[in-house]
Image (cartoon, rainbow, N blue to C red; front, side, top):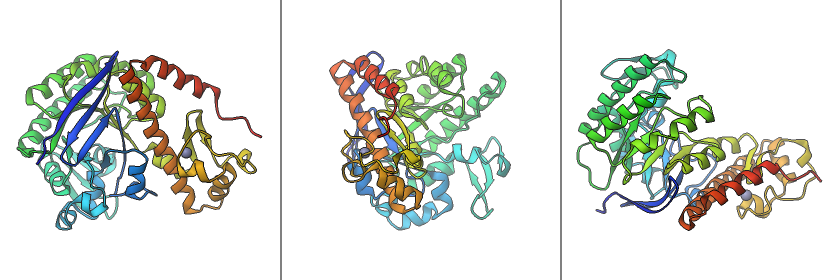
Length: 375
Ligand SMILES: [Zn+2]
């Protein structure tokens, strides 16, 4: 069995280019992870997700534990086999999604009891149960069970929550045990409070993890506050381990996070917005529902090599959106995932060549131009 490892190959300012090695393959960093919530990246075949350039997917513990259940997936050979994705999978701990069920949950030192949004049945998640579920799924990168408070929050609330998460981090570490080839990531909390972020990072480093996430951001605080935290928080974490920013984000969030030393990100944005007629291109966001596209024979993005741009016009994409045809979700999701992965490749190449600031300046200049003019 191969080992889990991380190598930084190049740096440019605070940004890092590297590779995470796992027994299921390498993950080029900075990496964007598409989200496969219920054992599928919606509207995409796994081989299509791979064709966009994704090295790793994210699966959601909360959704999978309720349906079809972790025990059933385990009996069927694990999540990779179940969903036909043989490359690395990262699973979240379930914590974030359970916490967002504010009316349906009860939080104690031991963990969280909650009612399923599907059938109202009662469940309990603890650090130990989250580790068990993620083991049954066969996840390559397992996340600690933590609590994530919404921002803004006062210092006392942030401190109490962060310290609970650090006790849960130790319990997660103990329950995870020694599993060669599998990684456990700790999650830094502390909201937008610098001292609490540093305290959290110190607690995690004392426990010792294979990678470290910056949690508690992208929870509605806005880009300015997020970047303020990212100006210092990654620096509290070990340089020789991957740093993962959870739930981010929009293309300009991704670029800003990579500039600040983040190695991994995930977000539902490219797939979710693909299903609502929103496309992301190097010239910014395009709403394909807009009537201006009705007679437009040009592709979404002339320079994009994805199937949606190579083989279909804006007029066709507009038509299948208005007609609510399934192919619209398929094509726009493919395009969006392709665009996000191409952006990551561009960032990796730029860091490797020591020209990240020029790449970022060009990224912003192209977006500032806006979408191509109507015909
Ligand atoms: Zn495209």
